[in-house]
Image (cartoon, rainbow, N blue to C red; front, side):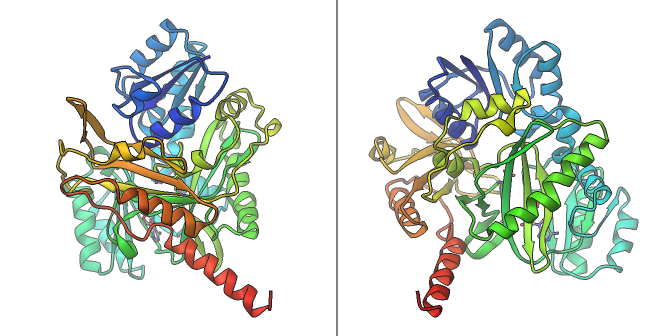
Length: 436
Ligand code: AMP
Ligand code: GLY
């Protein structure tokens, strides 16, 4: 088979790495790809938004399977375009991708199908939005409606800050078109989890659970980012919570989409807050999470390609993937300044020491090569990912590897997976209390 992966980040590196292990696959292309991805896939200089050119490429090269990494081409209708030309593509169509592309649309679907989520209102007018603040309690959650690379959510402790956030989105248009509307919603307290599943529109195959770390600094301080690290599985998703997410979120979601005549095929990602009243939806994504995809690919024992094919062919009920029991942890190393404006072109040292690392892999998110040397070329630069016999071992292994790598201005969180460690400690304590 010939496979084309669209995208260039750490998630796409993980997908290409996993797909390259499939005995079914002879050749992989990645558009636009990256210097890191080039180890496994031929880079094609077409951007993810150039969907016509991507379709022409797939036709010309007789690509058997195209896998879409990021959301942008999905919201532009790449799946509709490929399907209209008889090309096999993994990722939802434009109508289905609105679940991620428009928070207002996602909220409508949630409400229509009585799926638990934060109470909310949508506004296009700043004065009306500010007036509404009087009716809700702080902290205020103000969200730009459209795509904003994980940065369009502002959590404001005071009314003054919430008013400033409204002005930033609706008046100063900091998020451009993504900020033509905004959503103000109830603050949810609890622990977050990322719940991803493959669906062919009829059946749902849950993938391993995971947890992201959205804030830039340790202890969830500082602004939101695209994701500073992730681990899988997430102990907060107990078997009971897992069942509730399936029964109360994903099944009604699929039924609701079908009722609207929308067939969802691809990965559905539900960002959920596990509150004292159970799971509540924070957001949907129409693609694999980044960086959650990295530890999940490291834990997937089965070939990924038949899973993607089964999703496209409407046969996801007929496959049963196998997973490594060992947990996996990914720590994202970032450029100085990220998530604000950041430096580029800094030389990265130490990568060669991890070339034959038996317990993990370093996924590249924003690197380039200059005269044979690795340099930084993005905000999130590397996703160092390891598996261990337990969560403590995986965390130890990943930070040992992180210690090998450096560049001027590099920063990362030191507390990735701390919540999982706390969960496993409390499990052990509870076992001790019970006397076993
Ligand atoms: P979103 O892009 O909607 O998932 O929001 C990004 C992050 O903001 C989430 O992962 C949460 O950490 C936080 N967040 C969003 N909505 C809420 C909410 N209603 N209550 C508390 N935190 C939230
Ligand atoms: N890691 C969160 C996301 O991919 O949206």
